[in-house]
Image (cartoon, rainbow, N blue to C red):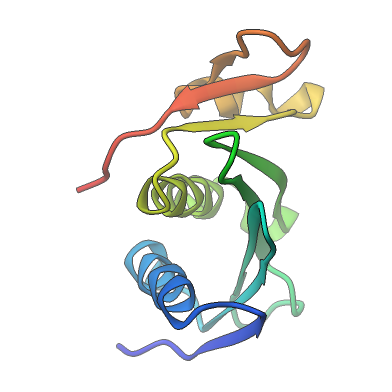
Length: 146
């Protein structure tokens, strides 16, 4: 089944957009009806937002934002949202795996997050542990997904 992917890019290279789209295809659950990518490519960072939608649902069933800081060789997940109607379906896990895979493709090995208090167990299950120097942040060294 082919899923439509809408890419909206601002000052992005074709290779960055292609990498982001390929990763999204790899991790997009079969139950998804559509996905979108927004990319902001600046001098020292790349910000990517992946959005999934499920029918029938609101326009935003789930999304994740990851910012890859090239000079600091790290990525930060700034936002992860899964609509309450779709929680515990694996959607959040797949979005995090896509963000981690994108970071790895961009040459970054560490992904960090400031989790909400109630989401700590999710991040621990995903392999995140206390950040080396930032209070309340969690960190993970990423490896390839098969």
